[in-house]
Length: 167
Image 1 (cartoon, rainbow, N blue to C red):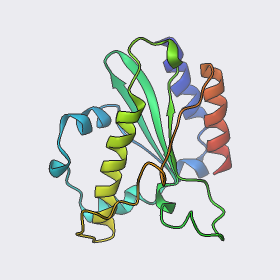
Image 2 (cartoon, helix red, strand yellow):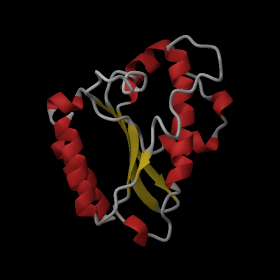
Image 3 (cartoon, rainbow, N blue to C red):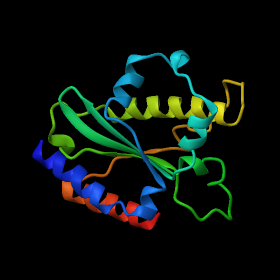
């Protein structure tokens, strides 16, 4: 538990004001609520989805079954432009940072969380673009891949530091 608190404290300290304006964080209960409900009950208003796709980094802390980790969506706002030869931004992806790594018996199923996040982002994107076709799904397994850094927690901290300072 102390390791997680240090993780979030250091993460918070690394976010400078310029990066903070390009980052949006969610409550730890957000992903639990997504898992507890069906997508047809997820409602978005236009202003909330506009705000959702403005920052380049979305932080989703996850606290479930006695385990804590962080899911980071990088480059969601660039989902349609990253395939262009002229695009020079970060590769859209979902990164799962687990301070306990593979040692935790209660680790999160990162694939299940990634699927839920993509489903949620697709629904938000359709609202954002005023698209009624449910087959419009720019956030897929290949367009928004899951990245799971390996190694100890300090490696995860260094990876987050690099990402947050290079945006």
